[in-house]
Length: 360
Ligand SMILES: [Zn+2]
Image 1 (cartoon, rainbow, N blue to C red):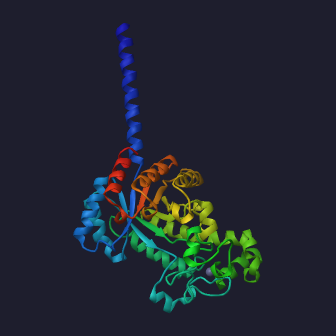
Image 2: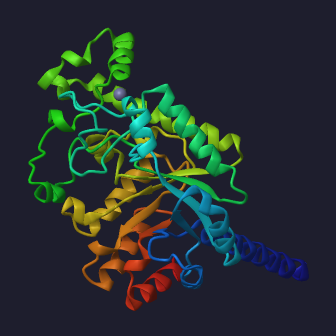
Image 3: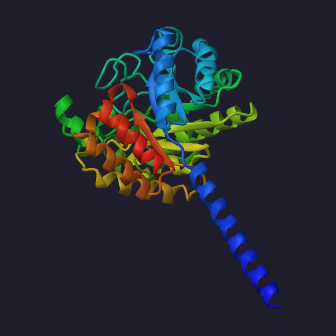
């Protein structure tokens, strides 16, 4: 009997140890870390390969990589050679494309004061935006993401600028453009193209073209704009999933901020992962704010899919700030971080990133 008790005790200890070990493996495997980077500063493949090696040695799992679609096959092969995932980072609705601008200028969004972003982009010359309501735009973008999703072995399609032009700029940018954006002003309020007006009228009986300065008070009209972006994301998600691939997106910090500033209701989307750009300096916030953003984001998507906290290197005043930002992301429930960009990192940042990933 004594012997049996002894055996049972050891059996229990063995099972408990195994369970704990499994839990630890699970915890480690669910965290992932990424960077946003483009080909801009790494044209030579030697240089790019060195960067990939450095990223892998630091504990990074994948890169959101921006380049022309035809260049992806080679970059995917190089990333995989070094054990990194490669996701195709592409701007979607903001689209400065000469062919589209000359052949389909009518696909671009129109402001409340009747100006098209094709000819009169707000803020900066490249702010030319496709209207998410138009079936032709959705078909065009669907074809684009399908062509990316079909690239052999690519790990995912990473959407960026999947939103409207900023109806309200982040606080720190007001001074940059000499604007006070305390509410929704007509030149920055989109979209009032024929398709948007017509569809909204069909759905509600209201003519948004007559709203004028009362437009910002109409919650239903605001929701319609969120929904048009969401419907476009849904179409792209369906197309990418049908090709057996993954889709994810860079989004504004929280659903609340995203809706208010850029009409992006991302908690209503069904993508495979979120990369909120928790860039505290744009909002004149401190590092603790990153934790709050992660908490709100994770809660909004109900933990359905991972959320990776986007960190902005120029906003880190010291390397220690970078450490605190990573830790704030973890405390907020993020599944990892995504750094913009590795080119902005000094030796001290690389060391901190490795340390924090190792103990995540
Ligand atoms: Zn429109």
